[in-house]
Every structure is written in C-alpha cells, then in structure tokens.
Length: 144
Ligand SMILES: Cc1cc2nc3c(=O)[nH]c(=O)nc-3n(C[C@H](O)[C@H](O)[C@H](O)COP(=O)(O)O)c2cc1C
Image 1 (tube, rainbow, N blue to C red):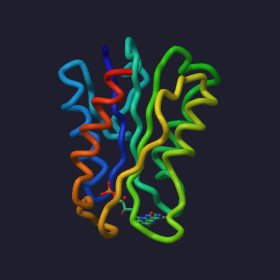
Image 2 (image 1 turned 60 degrees about the vertical axis):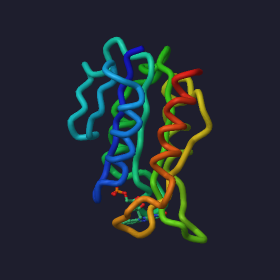
Image 3 (image 1 turned 30 degrees about the vertical axis):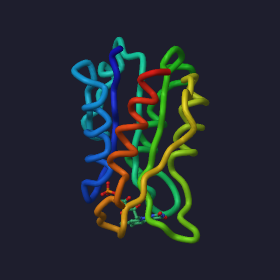
Image 4 (image 1 turned 135 degrees about the vertical axis):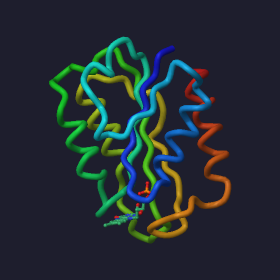
C-alpha cells in the first residue's frame, strides 16, 4: 500500500509524529513537509495522512492552503486520516476534525476518527506516551 504523510510543524513535534507514523508503515510511505508537496506525489497512493499543529484554534495556514489546492472530487478513491498536535487547554480549538471534513468534501474517504496528540507546551515536547500512541494508531490504520 503506497501512502503519503503530509505534515506542517514549527517546533518539530508534529514532524516527529509524522515520521514515527511513517516508519510504522514502512518503505512504501513518503513523509513530506507540506511545503514540499507536489501534485505528482498523489500518484498511485491509496492512503493520505495529514498532520498539523493547532494554531489559533485551526490548522496551520500552509495546511489549509494545501487542502484548498485540490479540486472537487480530486481525492476520490483515496483513504485519509488526520491528526493534530495541541496543548492541553480548556479551549484548545481543533485542526484534525476540520482537516477530515475538508478532505471528505474533496471526495476522500475518512477511515478513522480524527486523532490528536498532546504537547506539553507551545514548543513541546510531546506528552509522555504520545509517540507510543502514534505507533499504535499507525498500526490500527494499517489493518483497516
Ligand atoms: C501562534 C500559536 C498559536 C497556537 N494556538 C493554539 C491553539 O489554538 N490551540 C492549541 O491547542 N495549541 C495552540 N498552539 C500550540 C501549538 O499547537 C503547538 O505549538 C504545536 O502543537 C507544536 O507542534 P510543532 O512542534 O509541530 O510545531 C499555538 C502555538 C502557536 C505558536
């Protein structure tokens, strides 16, 4: 199964999660910063995972621009999953649910509930156990 993982990251936490998830998927998986994405990267993929930090209660600007770059139904036939990173606040907002909704509106099939991982402060690091949880999540997706 050829997969593509697209992430944005300012302090490295979302990047680390994307790379960790990518490793669980193995060789047929490309992990790319959202700025490095080119339309041809979509060729032949059956699974797309998108990860973004929550910034100001929503996905990063680059992630939103990436999602808005597709035409209607362009992602038909592609299975997708999304995650965000966030701090533990009473009102943290959301990125992952918004990203899943946007992808669904582009014709993609959202195969798991939007997921998120906690960073212990703006710059991280990730909260204890989150990398393990990311590995488990990757394996859960692999089996779907
Ligand atoms: C300008 C700015 C706005 C942020 N807004 C939110 C927010 O609305 N909700 C939240 O949970 N975390 C917020 N954060 C914390 C980020 O989610 C956190 O820095 C990010 O998950 C770290 O991931 P990264 O290392 O991949 O950049 C904000 C951080 C910055 C720098």
